[in-house]
Every structure is written in C-alpha cells, then in structure tokens.
Image 1 (spheres, rainbow, N blue to C red):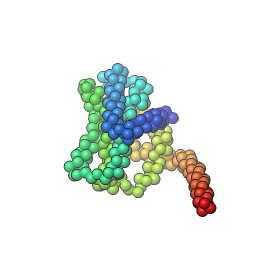
Image 2: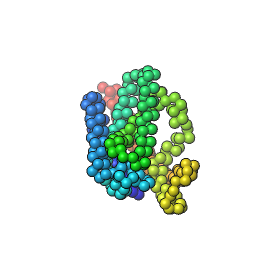
Image 3: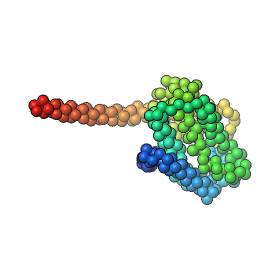
Image 4: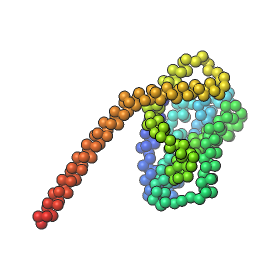
Length: 281
C-alpha cells in the first residue's frame, strides 16, 4: 500500500515533537522562534526543490502544463513524500495545542474584532490554499507565484484549520461549531484511519470501470463519482475497523485495565501496611 508513506512521515514528526514542545514549555519565545524557523526552512527547501527539478507546486492529476516537469513519479519521490517538505503544518498543530493549553490555564477572553479578523483570515487562507492552484492548471507563466504558492500553501491551509479548531474550542465557532458537532460525525470520525488505509483500492476499482482517458463532462458527474467513492470507502473502512482496528483497541484496553488494577492493588496494600505500622507505633 504505497499511500501509507505518510504514516512513516508522521512518525518522524512524532519523534521530533518533544524538541518543540519542551522548548515551548521551558522558553516560550525561543520555542516560538524555533517553530517559525522550522516552517520557513521547510518552505525554503521546498521552493529550492521546485526550482531544481522544475516541479509544479503539487501533484497534478490532469495534464501537467508544459512549463513544468511532467514526470509524476519523480515529483512523488523527490518532493511529495519527503518529511522535510511537510513539517510546516505539523508545527502549526503543535503551536495550536500549546496555546490551547495556555488558554485553559489563563482563561483569556478575546474581543469581537479579534474573532472577526480570525475568521476573515481563516476563510481567505483556506480559499487561497485550495483555489490558488487555478493559475497553475491554466498554465499561466507566473514562476514567482508558483514558487511562493508551492512553498506555503499547505501551511496556509493548516493555519485555516487551526483557527477553526481554536474558535470552536474557545466558544467562538457559532454555526460552524454546531455543524461540526453533529452526532453523525462521531462514528464517521472513528472510521477515518481505516478509510485512509482502504480508500485507494476503491479509487482504482472505480477508475477501472470508466473509459480511459477520463474526460471532464460536468460538475454533477464528477460530484456523483466522488460521492460513490466516499460511500464505498466507508463501507470497506467499516469492515477493516471491525476486523482489525477495534479488536486491537479492545485488547489494549483490557491489558491496560489489568495493569492499572494491579497498580491500585499494590498501592492499597502499601497504604494498609503503612497504616498498620503507624497504629502499632
């Protein structure tokens, strides 16, 4: 399953995360500088790689404009899966988690202007990160824009999502928080990992049923095709979760519960011994 490359990438980030977390806890300003520097270095490396290999800002599922290197696998191996080009959004998540913990301890409240600016920025960042790809797909000769977009679009999208999490957590989410809090999303979110592992066979299977090359014939057919993929991916993900993920989680819970009960028995036994000694003395 070639698409599981991100598990290894995220594991590397997980191993590096204590460096940023401990620095933030011990020296806040130094930690923030370290996080910002890491994001900028990662973006710079990505920009240099785009220039060196003449690669588009991201992988293009359709025809690559002639001004870019059209080798899909070279883009995948040289830039798309490399952790040094993807750590920016992970750092955004670390900083967000740090601030949420600090807010819980301090209880700071923000005014309407700050909240309005945050939502405007989040909306703009999300739209730019998604629809900023339009000039690239059109093949417009904007080389400087392509490099800047390719270097920062993932981090920009992470900032947009970070604000949504921040606003909903702190009570500023409004209708967005109510929408995301629907109970129907709870079981769907529990299946996310299994769907991630099983979604690519669904995509391959549905593509094989279509005439090749796949032509754009309108928005509704594309939308319906994606809805069918999503539905089938969740059906397959549910089976994977029931057969492997949930049994493993239950075994882990049983083992951890047994270990906790043994610790509780040891503590209670030690307390009983101490009380007996104190009563005799």
